[in-house]
Length: 355
Image 1 (tube, rainbow, N blue to C red):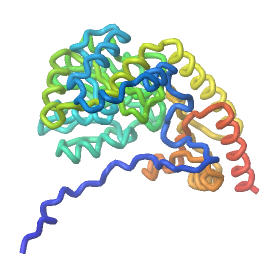
Image 2 (image 1 turned 30 degrees about the vertical axis):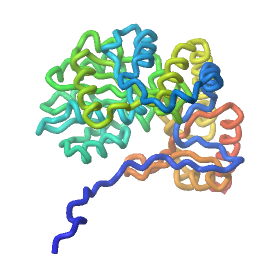
Image 3 (image 1 turned 30 degrees about the horizontal axis):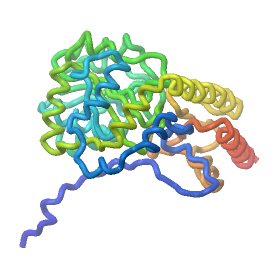
Image 4 (image 1 turned 45 degrees about the vertical axis):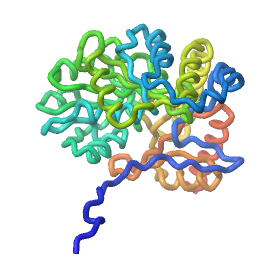
């Protein structure tokens, strides 16, 4: 006898970082911003007319789209918004990757890419990064159904030059190339200008990291009008009201507060550079992170030992089980006080392990 269970989709889902809840914890495992959102977000909340919530939101999120377009000096028809960059990326996968040829992305990168490929039945190939966790552009000069590059990369934190990205794009002009810039605001350069040069480039960004709004789920993409229209067609095929009224107003307000954004971004970067120096003194090695986290390994103390020791102290970092990176920890940048406590705890764990 057949069973409905025979027709269930069987897939290994993406595993998000855990969300512990202890009053004394230091949470450095999901790359959230340690500082609160722009004060303009509080102003929106304080003056929000809750009676609006009985009405459906604008399906086009026009206020938010225009604010993002104005800030980035592009046309509103070149902007797409979604429920976090994960939503934006998933829609892009559905819209653009419909070939029988494999899409290409690095072997060590954001682990949602292969999950989406499996979910949407998209063939894919993972291209190994080199020993320094850098991508080799020539590895992408082959027949494919599309390319996805996180830049700066996660979880490694390494950023490729715009020239390297353009080399890949130049050699893949018959497919869509997605540049996932979730962490770009902590870096020195964006690929955004390439959307004006190549009509097959989609640049994806988020409010979750640099704008302290992970809880609001606001993501956006930039591309040619044709790409954005194709994504809108897919999105409206299953969700006609994607963004809430509140997220639209908060997102528009936050992106207009340039001074606060620059201030908190500079603070995160300054703390990151200080922590790099301290980690080197403790015996860690790592690439030159251009993000709000550091991906580090210790030559003498296993990552699992440090991870477990920190966890016992209610300090949470991220540890991955993939073979190439099993001895690495991804450490989000918190406040100076949080990082000072993290460094003290880590030093004690290393000292105890080495006797």
